[in-house]
Image (cartoon, rainbow, N blue to C red; front, side, top):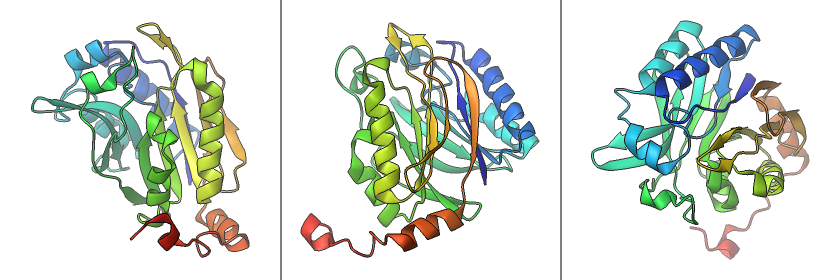
Length: 264
């Protein structure tokens, strides 16, 4: 499977402009042979809580119908961080759309970043489910940004959900760029899985984002990497055979002792 990551800078509060940019990046990725493209966190609205609260929509409107049409037209799977409004609640979500334009997966961010000035908890409701979805002989586990600091999420995805490609849509800021690199690589190594990290660039509401998107193989090798400050597309191949070979050479999952970890 050829995977693309679209490292973009959304326009704060301009959903229509962001939809046009997403469509353009999807077309470019398809032309380069990608079968799946992954985008950062909250790329429909931009990343500022007051703006998200104003522009978040149910998935019957906003960016998701346009993304579905793009996926169908290009026969390209899309995973994208978007807002989701349900009644009086707003979720920081990912949508997974298959090549026919159908929504086949959804993830609502389970760990909210609460320190000021971000204070996600004042805008979002936490999700309470993890999940993974099959695609092209691989199994994709969804996650968003701050989740990366919780290794339990990725172990659950790898062990319980049988994920071997860990997808991260992110709006990670510059002061902690080294944490992003190290944690993403660690998640790949410890779970012997691909990590596909789509982090945004640009600045919203005084917060500058650090890019550095990457595709990391199950051995922990960065096979594609983006800059810290430019919009760009990166690509790599992900293979179930590579996952199988890495896990066969060092069978860490067979050596786990769940009873020591308090697992059921």
